[in-house]
Amino acid sequence: MPYLIDGHNLIPKIPGLSLELVDDEQRLLELLQEFCRLTRKQAEVFFDNAPPDGVRARNLGLLTARFIRQGSSADEAIRKKLERLAGEARNWTVVSSDLAVQTSARHAQAQVLSSDNFAKTLLKALDETLPDKGSVDEPSLSQEEIDDWLTLFGGQ
Image (tube, rainbow, N blue to C red):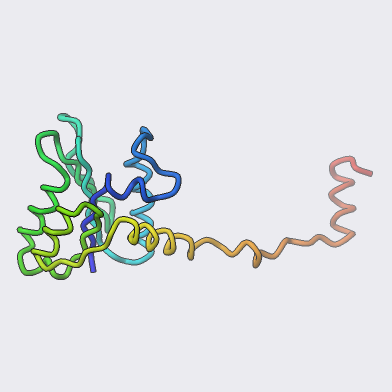
């Protein structure tokens, strides 16, 4: 099930991210892009306050980033996307903790997931791909190999 994500609503829910960071949106995009790749799910993330001369949308594989110019909002863009989806909206999950966005999603019969819960899902998916630190075998050298290295680097 694809996602519609309220980006600025999600950023504060991710440990290490903050709306105060200059690159908060880029860092979230990198996490979401990896999440989409790993889960093979499509997502669209919406950000408020795009610069007037900036890019309005970026396609990043399974992830599309939408930058909403001043005068409108990510909330409004999500609502309009749900309207365009019409009956297909029920196949999408809206990620936001904003009550107005959640209400719009429910009205469109889309699934609703709070930003807190999605952040947990995202981090779990990303964490499962990291190698288990306890299971990494340390390479071992024989005494002969150690002696060869010591000779090579002047240790003997």
